[in-house]
Structure formats: structure tokens, C-alpha cells
Length: 373
Ligand SMILES: *Cc1c(COP(=O)(O)O)cnc(C)c1O
Image 1 (cartoon, rainbow, N blue to C red):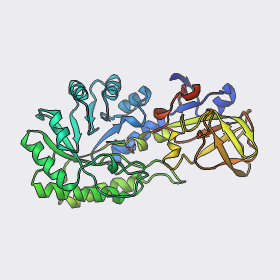
Image 2 (cartoon, protein in one colour):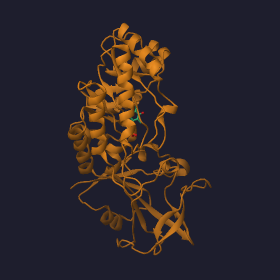
Image 3 (cartoon, rainbow, N blue to C red):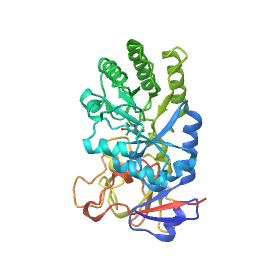
Image 4 (cartoon, rainbow, N blue to C red):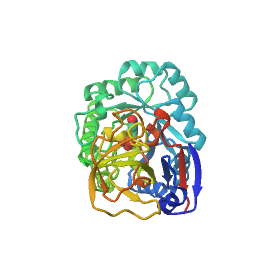
């Protein structure tokens, strides 16, 4: 990505001056710092950032400046990126299936916490002394945009067994879970916390920590996320479930931390009746639109920087590649005075957008403009 800085608040001004005909991201460090503060002040425990949502160096550096000192990483490459932003960062290696060479790399990066969901993978780690082993619990819980329990996690019975093995081998036994991404229901966390406490009580093993995962929602479907309600639900469930003395808590937000701090600007290549061709799509920064409710705040600017305010029509939107499935899954409400050359500014594109974009057919964003205010 080519980085650029601009002294302005308003991406619309930059667009009307530069008229980019390639997709451009705008990064707003001020918004990212404010969200980091919201987590650090509101969450009752340690806040780690799940790097996969957006591993851009500027994002990691801004989070470090804002006081985030621990990171949820899934691969040696992510560990290296975090170390570059902060040599002292605490690494939580919470991808429960690892190759032998990844385990060697994780050890050499000094990862402190390792998640597991089956004995064979615990065996692979080898010596557990000094390592936090976070056993990943799965429940049939709803509330998220899609269910992470379908890939990883052990049943409560298996978690109990794994905790016993971890303790016998000298590891620090914790429980972790992940309610699934874009989870809007605070009860999902409560259900998991009560189940984790049940397992811990059954085994009689005091938990080193309880990691409540990521999954915190971003702005979607016209509503801002109710993070405070989720923090309150987590705090009160942990107090109740552990009779007033819960283990130290950890969370690992990805999406909710970074979503609001990027906007994505795309240009209209052609308008043909109710069909609109953009210069990016599901192979680029809008790839998540196939799986989850899309970013719902879109502003449209004419060539001279005026915001289009016309009544909306349901546009069929195609991306720029020659592939017929390069189409947004649902119609998008766009103003009826839309014209070729206009720019669309999509809010809340910080998570799972740049990180998932491909270079298919020679497209994909290559520029990030950092807004300095
Ligand atoms: C993806 C992931 C996260 C972050 O999820 P979000 O929905 O982006 O908050 C956190 N922890 C683990 C283990 C993950 O795999």
C-alpha cells in the first residue's frame, strides 16, 4: 500500500481535488485512538487487538500509542508485524491449530498465551511451563453474523479434560471462547461465561484467566454498537458466575476496534440504467459483503465535491473485473442523480476490507491516505 498524509478532516475535499480513479482508503488515527480508549476504559480486563481485522503498520502503531500492549495473533507473520510496531508487545497465539514450524516460531517470538481445543494440538506444543494455555470452549450460541464454533472449540466435557492435562503438565490453565463476529447480543457472552465457570468449578482448577474473545459489533443495519451494554453484561456475568471473584478477564476485539477508523472511496465507472459499475467490489475492499450485513453509510459526491442528495433507487452494483460474480449481493440505495465519475464514500471499512482485498484482474486499493487533524 502507498501511504500518503493529508491535513484535512474531510475526505470529500481530497476526492474533489485529486479525482482518484482507483480505490482509496482514508485512515483516521483520531477515531482509532478514541475507540481504543473506549475499550481500555470500558472493558473490565486486558484488551488485546485481533490483528487479522487490519494488520496495517499505521493501525498497529496507533494502537500501541493509544495504550494497547497485547495482541491476538494467528500466524508468525502477524507476530512479526506486531513486533515491528512494538518490540515489547504481549503476544497471544490464539489460532488453535499450528504446524510444527509455526510452534517453533511462536516460541521464538515469545508468545505468552496459546489457545488449544484438542489434545493432539496440545501435545504438539510440548513443554508448557510458563505458558498460558487457553482452552477454547464452544457452545451452540447464536447472536453473531456467523458462527466461529463451527471450526474451532471443544465441548465443555473436553474443555474440563484439557484443563486437567494443562495443569498436570505445568501450564497456566485458562479458558477462552469466541462468540462469532459482529455479535450484537450481550447474552452470547453471558452464556459462555456461565458455561466456562461451570467447567472450571467441575474441575476444581482455578483459572489463570478467562478470555472472552472478540466478536464485538461494529456499526451495522443503521445502529451504532452497544459496546457499553456488552461490557456491563460481561462484568456482571463474570461476577455472578464466579461468586464475586472472577479470574482476570481478557478480550480480543478486531472488527469493533478498527471498523470506524477507515473509509473507502470508490469511483463510478459507468451508470447504465439502474446498473452501476464501480472501480472495486467483492474481490477488493467489499469482499465481506458476501458474508455479512454490509457497511450501511454511503455518501456520494459529484466531480466538484457536492454531496448528491437525490431520492434513492435500488442500484445493481458490479465491481470492475471481468468476472460475472463480481457483483454486490444486494441492491444498494444510491441517489438518482448519480453520474459517472462520482465518488462513493463507504464508512466503517476498517475491518476485514483492506485485509481481504485481492489484486484480481489488476484491481484493488493501493493507497491509504492518513487524515491528520
Ligand atoms: C477473528 C478473531 C478475533 C476477532 O474477531 P472480531 O469479530 O473481529 O472481533 C478474536 N479472536 C480470535 C481467536 C479470532 O479468530
